[in-house]
Amino acid sequence: MSFLELFLIAVGLSMDCFAVSLSFGAQKRLKRKDIIKFSFFFALFQALMPVIGWLVGNAVNIYLSDVDHWIAFGILTAIGLRMIYEAFKGEDEKRSVDIREWKILFTLSLATSIDALVTGVSFGFIKVNILLAVMTIALVTFLNSIAGAYVGKRSIHISPKGAEIIGGLVLIGIGTKIVLEHLSII
View 1 (cartoon, rainbow, N blue to C red):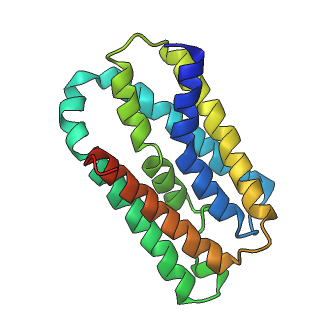
View 2 (view 1 turned 135 degrees about the horizontal axis):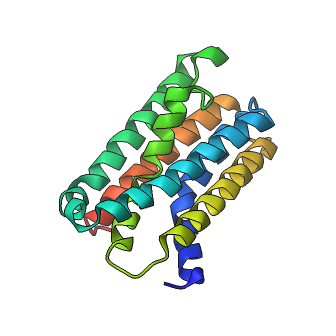
């Protein structure tokens, strides 16, 4: 597999992280250290999941390929619905979904990296330099997550409440897209 192919795979895998980062960045309350922290976690999970998939290979593919899209859909939809609910619950910043919370950060990192796990399984079937693949995926995800947060921060048209609603809808949309792609509807 060429570096260009690995890079394009990395860009594709990092788009979920970019969208989540964009919505959280639009909330304007994140500091640089917060952005670095969640970008690091997104990159870490996007790098670890292909390794796990690559190690497990064909045995897990039989079981996981049937349900991976439902797992991603469930996690992303649950977080998205929570974000929308919290946006309407009140203006209190403490009530909103906060990516700085460890359980939210962990769950989002896991949810946005499920496709990377399946990609890793496919790496087990083809000749790929797993170290180069993982480093490329991690770096692209880290940079795209930072970019998403800063693009979101610079947006003056989205209120924190609106950002949570949009972010929730984006997560639900990503989960729906994953299911539709696996069901060959789109």
